[in-house]
Structure formats: structure tokens, C-alpha cells
Image 1 (cartoon, one colour):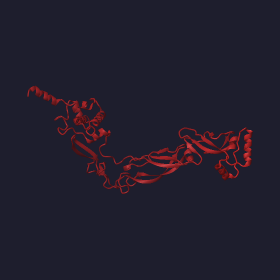
Image 2 (cartoon, helix red, strand yellow):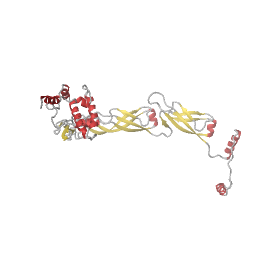
Image 3 (tube, one colour):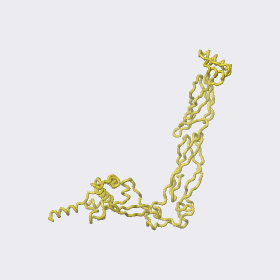
Image 4 (cartoon, helix red, strand yellow):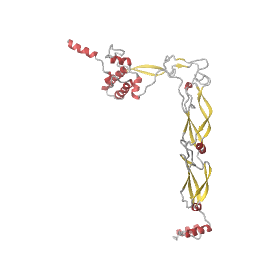
Length: 389
């Protein structure tokens, strides 16, 4: 072999790979930009997504580039012109392909990052919801209502620690306090490390050898208590009132969540509600609608005298301003709408019929008298079958 050929081969081995170019990022890219670029390429070239055997080498290069650039020490070697994955070039393996953790593969597909290390035993509690039924008058003007709440509270015996008196949690012997265990598998991609929570300590890193006899180590117990909730005037059906810190206490005596009181308004026997306005129906005799009248209307504040003008037509509506529900946000109240249901009499005696016909004659209205059939219903049926009118 000539010296020129040997020199050329030496040069090939000393030139470091451009890991930045492989991921398509600039040399001053932030760690987040590097991670986003890796996720994008991994979703495109992963063998489970792209079965083309020609892309397997590409995927290996992508993994190697991410391994290097996500490690500050290895990235520094690259920035100085070296290659940490080359033989003798740093901390990278010399055989078996590039090494990428299983969680980084999962991050590439799902865009999530799992917090590593032991999980704290003390965690925030969940929110709770409670249904409260109220009458219209209570939702309209507000009320202070006692409610019974059944939630988790801090264990009074261990004060949330979960341990029996005089004892303490101890370090888990399985994971050594890390809260997680790892297993290494060899695949065609190289070594894949799977990290999962420790089953012995449930990921906490410690175990409780002597749990509290009252709460069983959870740090909380169920308790029923009564509290008073202040319902503001103007709330509507379905609204929720938030009571901060009145929800479930978290595991390990963690801070409680919130309690949401959901309002359910009972159906009223007179009024229907639409927002801040109320609606009701009132039956009005035909003569009263024609001549006009004064009538008393029931409102949330008591009875109200209302004038009905002469000649009021069926379907008319009277509006009583400010007699509705107080506005929840703002000042003032809605209105009360009285829908008039004008009724025509169905049975008239002879004198009433004569007077109505006389009234119609005076107004110049033509009223055709209905035909009368002697003999009643059966006579009319007989005439119908015989073809008589």
C-alpha cells in the first residue's frame, strides 16, 4: 500500500461525524431544540413506523447523534472537534451500536418526559363535587346552606406520616432508595434500558415497615363533616361554587383539593326561569280582556297589582320590570313576564247566548246560528246515513 493511500485512510478515521447535521440543528441549538429534532426524526425513521431496511442505519445515526448532543460532556467533546463514540474518542461504546435509553425512544413518539427518581409520598389531593338542591327563592336571593361532606382528611393518629407511633420509613432494599429499577435488553438497535417504578416500594424509594393502624399507611382517613356554604344571590341551575381547600386531602397528608358545590334549582310551581328573567301564565276571562281589569299577580316579593287594558288580545304579555331575579354579576334585577291565556267560555245558558248575539248584532258581526237536529245525537246519525243534511 502506498504512503498516499495510507495517509488518506488515516484522515478518514480522524474526521469526526457532524452530529449537528444529522439532527438538522445548529451548533448553538438548545437542549430542547435538540430533543424536538430527535423526536421528529425518530417518528419518521423508527423501524416500527418505517419498515424499509435501508433506514435502519439512518435511525442508528439519529440515536447516536441524540446520545452525544443530549449529554453535556459528550457534546463538549464534539465542539472541540472530537468524536466521543469513536474508538478511543471518549465515553461512547466501541461495539454494539449507539446506546439510547428506552425513555428517550418513548419521548420521541409521545412527547413526554417521565420524572425520574423516587416519588414523594405526600401528593396533592383531588377535587370533590357535591350536589345541592335549592328552591327558586333561595337561588334568587341567596342563602347560607349547611352541607354534609364525606371526604378524606389527615389521619389524626399519624398526622399524615402513615407510620405507627415511634417508627419511620426505611430505605427500600430493592431499589436502594432510587424509586425505580432498570433492566437492559439487547436488540438490533443495540442496548435498550427500560426504567420502571420499583414494585417493592411503589416508586417511593422508602417502605413503611410499621404502617399506622388507623390509616394503613395512607396518611388520611375518611371523615364526614358539616360545613356552611354561602350561596350568592342570582346563581343559576348548573353553576358551581368553589370552596378552596375543602376537597380531598392528598396521600401522605398532602394539601387538600377544592370542593365544588353544584347548584340544582327545583322546579317552581308558578314561575319558570330564563337567566335573570321569570315567566308565568295567567288565565284571563274573555270579558275581562275585552273590558280591561285590575288583577293581582304573585311575584317573588309578594303580590303586585297589575292593570290589564281593555281589548287585550290572546297571547299578550305583561312585563313587570325589576321583578325577576337579582343579577349575579352586576346590579339590578331581571323582569317578570306575565303571559295572558285568554279563555272563551265553553258553556252558555240561553240568556248568556242571547246577550252575546245581541252584542254581535250591535257590532255588526254576522253570527250564523248552528243547525239544530230534533231527536238528539241518534237522530243526527240517522239523517247522516240517510243522506239528509
